[in-house]
Amino acid sequence: MENVISKRQITRTDEFLIKHNIMVETRPDMTLEEILAICPFTRKKYEQAKATLERCPFPMELLFKK
Image 1 (cartoon, rainbow, N blue to C red):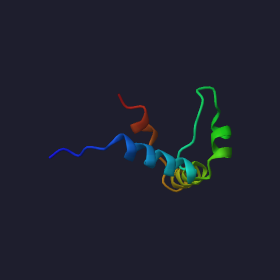
Image 2: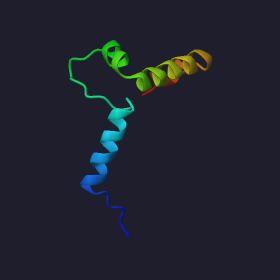
Image 3: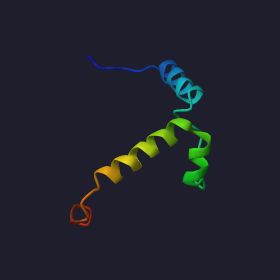
Image 4: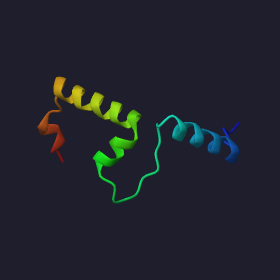
């Protein structure tokens, strides 16, 4: 049986995400600082990712490996 999501469920999910500042409306020309200023959830996740990279840096040889 397929998992089908109705348009109504998608709309309710989007409304929840926007209400709780998890998803924000963005424009293509927005900078990271602008997005972080309007979205506390994104700022929190961004800060967590930065802290994780400082603790456990990504090996550069893997980053540039082809």
